[in-house]
Amino acid sequence: MKPTIAITIGDFNGIGPEVTLKSIASPTIKKNIRPVLIGSFDIFKHFVKMFKLDIELEATDKLSTKIKNGVVPVLTIHPATSKSIQLGKISPDSGVCAGMAIEHAIKLCLSKEVDAMVTAPVSKEALHFAGYNFPGQTEMLAMLTRSERVTMMLLSKTMRVALATVHIPIKKVSENLFIDRIIEKLETVSSSLKNDLGIKNPSIAVLGLNPHAGENGAIGSEENEIIIPAIKKAREKGISASGPFPADGFFASGAYKNYDAILAMYHDQGLIPLKMTGFDEGVNFSAGLKIIRTSPDHGTAFDIAGKKIANPGSMISALQLAASIIEQRKK
Image 1 (cartoon, helix red, strand yellow):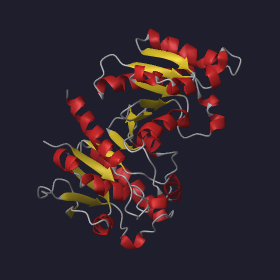
Image 2: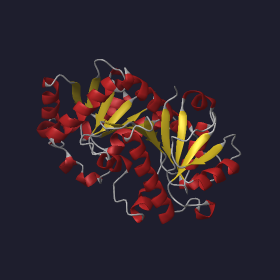
Image 3: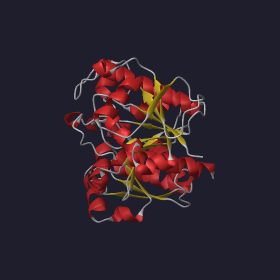
């Protein structure tokens, strides 16, 4: 049986529908996954025609309805039509549609009607216009699934990067780092590496916050006061954590190749090197979530929306990772 994966529409003014449709049209996804599109049938149909893709869509109200083999079911959760599309622009309609699609996909996952969900890129600004006041999709998913310990982890062929803090201003990073938070992140990542990725004895590298990892307090105290004690306590719990490492030398020297995952202290510290080495294949995974959720590691790319040049590689990888985790959890 192919795994059934719900794919949310994302922001329909961006490249979300394009990379989604290109992905499900690819032979690899057709062969191994049963996709279910969540959003607007009219909009998906519009983009299938626009991009001249060999996909047959069918509108349905419920997944229990029998759908002909090879046909992709679409659940319409918002009355947006092709007339609602404003390529490359922020609009409340796209935010409402994107938010409602996420909510509906979560319900399908929790009710076991689908095995996992993959979220297409959204505009945080459009979501905020629509009344969804979350820093990002990960935080929204955590709250709506009542998952207490969720860690954003980005994966590529070269590295896996988890984040101690996510969508907060740089000036607030230090005040949001605590010993218990870092221990919790290490526990969540270690557990996910074992249960979701099948790594028996995972090793995790922890980055320092300051240049040169603080140089023993000469360039900041966070390493000595927070990060080192957290690593020590995590190791006492049986977690193979090492560090803190100066981020620049750690990535430049290739030291990341010696670890199964990396815990970065803030968003750009970990994601710049990951995206530089694997932008078209990177996947965002919500470790610790009660359901399985992945997404491509890029944004809405409003500047190329509708130009037919968006690369679906990251979305294909997100679907493949979701399918792999579904299989791993069955074991």
